Picture 1 (tube, rainbow, N blue to C red):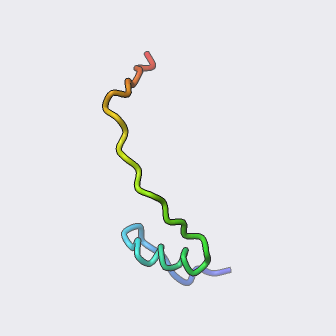
Picture 2: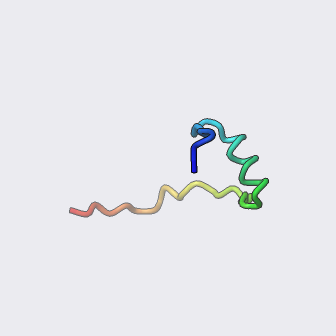
Picture 3: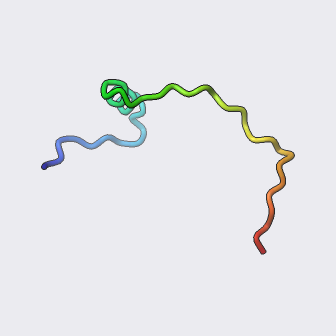
Length: 44
């Protein structure tokens, strides 16, 4: 096995094309941001 290419994290369009071609891309509905009313507990 040998490396033939590197995909950089900023190449999202290339990553999406490869995953779509392989049938591994899943379109997901956009999520709403978390509610600011959710309390975050301090572990200490």
